[in-house]
Length: 256
Ligand SMILES: NC(=O)c1ccc[n+]([C@@H]2O[C@H](COP(=O)([O-])OP(=O)(O)OC[C@H]3O[C@@H](n4cnc5c(N)ncnc54)[C@H](O)[C@@H]3O)[C@@H](O)[C@H]2O)c1
Image (cartoon, rainbow, N blue to C red; front, top):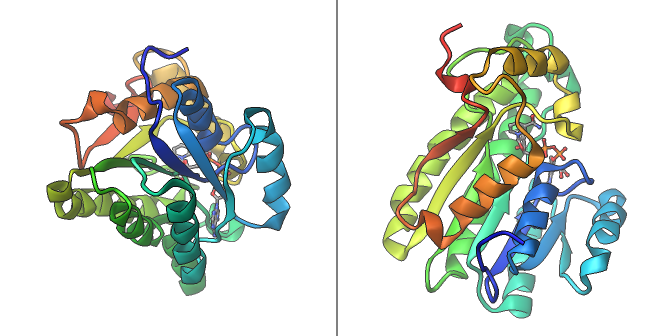
């Protein structure tokens, strides 16, 4: 059991695809802390995975939400209002880029690849934060997942552009929602083996590089990212908003 009590707090988690998803690690930590969880899934194909994972926990709302569809987002928050009344926490753990745009020359990025990647991976946080904040009369905490890049990773390509947009959104939303007591932050984990990560050309090399060069001389784990998520989502981080928190073994401070 985590030494924190989130009983009675309602949370919606976007982005569980399978047991390796970062969102699933966060869900497990939140469940241990006693939070009430609702999950969205991208499409029918993934519904079964999510249902199987949450089954041992009994009834948890499962809602289909493809974030490229405005009406899915509206319907999701309608259902959450019905089921929970109010919300205090949101996990946005969504990213997608067409495979052909995750490798090769960045200057070959197609207009459509740019649109799709930015729309799913960055734009989606904006309507989600807007609708979530409406269900947070007593304030709340929203987190997203970035791969904080001051550096360039060949292969990450258009996803790096989307993360830059996402990080800007975190700051802008933090400013607009702060007066309502809603905090918005991002976690920036080092490389973790997930479905999304496997699509990035050169991911395995990137992972080795992190393990070799980070001050902790190893890769971080899903559990470490989940613990940091619980921190940002909970009252322990009540004074923190608009922040990108690296959970990368210190890799981001290295000059080489
Ligand atoms: N794995 C890593 O190394 C790493 C590092 C830093 C940040 N991140 C970020 O963490 C987040 C979660 O990724 P992950 O690594 O857990 O991989 P993942 O593949 O398990 O999760 C990605 C999720 O995005 C969802 N998604 C994609 N398109 C969607 C759409 N149109 N509508 C709704 N959902 C959609 C997928 O269904 C999936 O659940 C992403 O934003 C990713 O960029 C990952």
